[in-house]
Image (cartoon, rainbow, N blue to C red; front, side):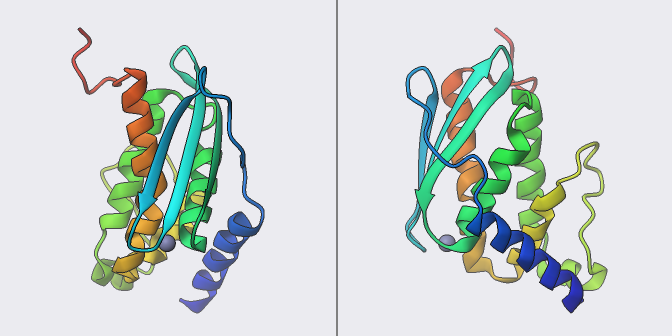
Length: 164
Ligand code: ZN
């Protein structure tokens, strides 16, 4: 489906050229997490603030390839204003999407996250084509792993963790 891939490329390039939420929040009070993908040289610095359980503001800085930088731009847009639990669900959904095998992708033409209740990944689905290029998957998941580190630092472990 070349049409779809063109569309996805446009979405990726749009986020690469016009990154959302670029910058750095003063830390503290913001939580700061840094990620590095040595395979490609991608760097991501993520800063975010919280109000209660909600990610009230998120910014990123960094450099690297179009996949890594568009992924982090899309991610900040997707998680801003969300709760920690929703952000963790998105991390999960995104990683599921990235682990879908190429054969499935070709067969289906499009990826549906069956068994994943709720959220649509929106623009993030543009990155699903990356699974065809295994070496680039780390570029796409870098920002998500960095977010996970950052969320772990806050001590908000979400519903899956024991509350005590
Ligand atoms: Zn990269």
